[in-house]
Image 1 (cartoon, rainbow, N blue to C red):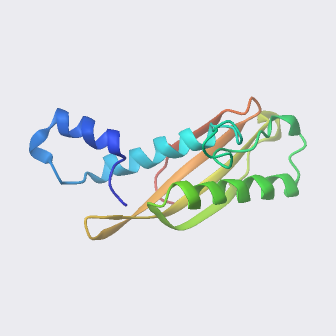
Image 2: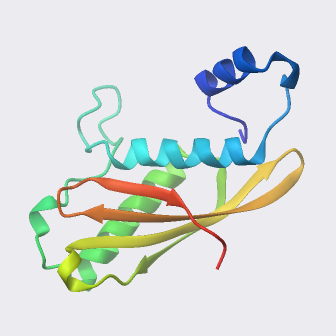
Image 3: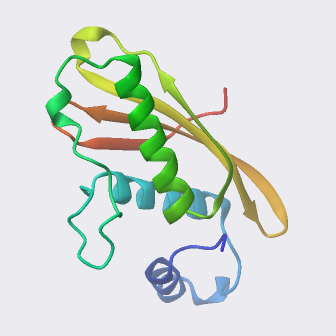
Length: 142
């Protein structure tokens, strides 16, 4: 399950048919980041086929991000990643401090991805803005 998602494989094959069957580490990692962004930007309950898909709406918490709220969001993200992005193993999600005036939550997500018989670390940063928008991006290893 470490390869690109189905339509990404089709697009890659169409663009470069000679690379059939080979995985590019960066392409797989970017696929995972895009998929997580899609999952986390979908609101829970909006997908009719799977009401558990997506992140709960946290926009009503305003600036009162208590430790309980941060813990609840972290657990929600962890549940979603484990269920819908099985390419990530050894998952670790940690809250990241942000200045209070930014009105957002931030998390570091890391794990390991199996690629062509090897294992590659994946490190991402995730910011949940007060509007509810979730930004996911790769980051360098710490």
